[in-house]
Image 1 (spheres, one colour):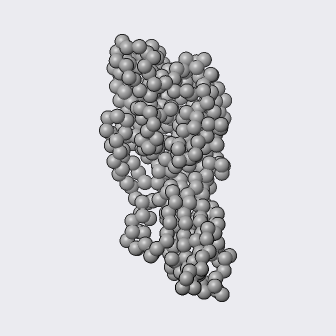
Image 2 (cartoon, one colour):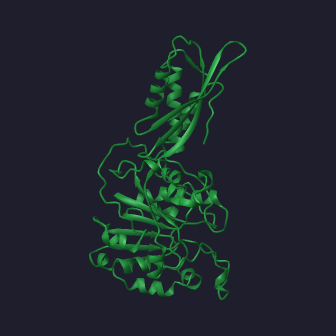
Image 3 (cartoon, one colour):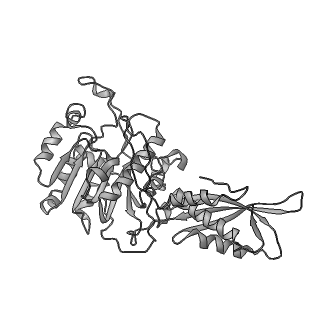
Length: 389
């Protein structure tokens, strides 16, 4: 989001309030799904970034049935959120039979109650199969945005959400809220060094992995941006192998039911998962070598200033201060938008700063902190010959 800083300096009170957004817990009220649940979450992580070793490798769980069995270091526990008819959970456990024998624990959950899962989603056979599979737990009525309170004290090595979606069509803002709520809640139930995986329909995530159907970022669910709200960084993407999963029994059942019991199945709202994308996220500070510059989060900020003493102003000094105040782990690209001489003879200059980071959960609030650090530096005379406009 563009933030223009022309005009008088922002008050210290307002600046302090905005800076605290990046470090204090917040409670955000949002109506999710169609049942008016409240979204409860935590602010982004502000732990100083350090390069540490990831505790687990980057093998995906959701991408392909063969990924889990071929991983060098396998997760010991997996939480699946948002199951419909539990056909994916069944396909996964069938593919991971050896891992289950070796102690893998899979917890598969649905948002709907058990009765809806069996009667409306047609999951009876899958539920019976999974109920008789050692190492598998089934839970119903689990809200993926409330994992932190539902599973307080429990953790999993992988927390996965398969094709999340608010009921209905054309609700991008609500789906963003759903993702943000999920990431905030997932942080509390993810084991140290673990990873979060989210499978999205092509075009929803907002990354280069969407390929030919990639949209403008503002017309997507902005997965990396929502993840940053929970302290997560996008580190990798992989194609969703729909054919391989389908061969093992996975059926995409859609995200809502317009039918009543006994009505035609064709009234389901189905997904096209053929070109789906699986996104992997890790906590800031647990990335190891798993950084991906192509997935860096970027935020644009404009700053205007008066050049009061041209003879002492140095471009190099301004650029150094911009990059220094951006913060550790943040890169800053600076361009000049305008240099204008006013009728009274004064000269103003407007610069555009593109802040980016592939190693931080770099949320909008944290970009604001970078910007206000620059403003403070300019106000205190760090750049000679400049005053904020």
